[in-house]
Length: 420
Image 1: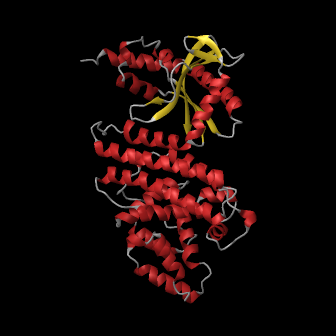
Image 2 (image 1 turned 135 degrees about the vertical axis):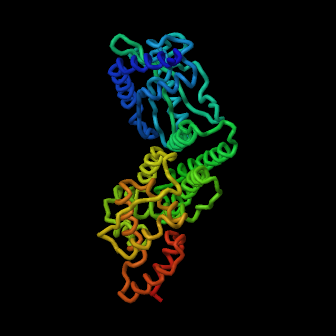
């Protein structure tokens, strides 16, 4: 027996998308180029991005929303309002409204049916006769505007979104944990409650981040680092606690591990090293207050933006909490320290969870990230010590409970071992 007609419809629609891929791509590029030229120089703007819906996403949307009932398969890709997606990314919630107001000023020519175009740019139009921001099904607001662009004799629909860093981050989490999770049930109130909790925390983070940017020039180095560390620890803990709960079905506290990871991210990670151009050892000394060279003050604004850019692209659903990790023994680090971690990484739940989270947040492959972490750990606990002090430190390390190895309190204890 053959399949029902809807699958033939979906294949014909997907083939139409493939056949017109060049046109859609050029139209998206044209939009991006115009929006970058118009809004890119505004201080609030972080980036302008665009995408054309993929073949798989098209197939899913047609079936999920029963779109095959309304339009022919050959026209559905031209009728779909978000076949092209364009996003203006900004820093904070307040910047979303500011950019929307800028859009209304620039798209000032009424071209009919609720659409407006910029002066001299009738090929691009936005539907600005609907209230913004609009309320989503999840209860949160979003600036989402339908538009159309004419290119090479064809009209292509698009959806323009204005999103702050935090809202972009939130959307990616929601999309990957719910929209892409076929096992999620709309009646799963626990997951909804956890996601609402994450959103509330991120709302607070946006406010804190805004304050940090506003006061960056007046704040001392230590205050900037302390504020960012508290903010990021909250974000990391909220997101990954939900993931651990989803993966294991058990409520587990990872607050201390989140704190340890964030401490690394702000003192020795690739994000810090890329911004400062320092070696790991120099970066650790500087950020731990050992090296107080004001000329090398860290630009934490750039670090937080880069980190959040990375975090929004993480496939959180694929983080295999409880799954075994395979990591090579580093040959360029303290083997005694690396060995104790590797001997326990797949036998201790908390150590295993710590490295799953750490590997997802640090850039590079797992082997590179592990080598960096061991180098960081080694510098923290052994740097500046005599051979006798190092021996005492390592002896204490080997006696520590394995689940406590990565904690900041443990690192501090080991750092002070043998000195007094």
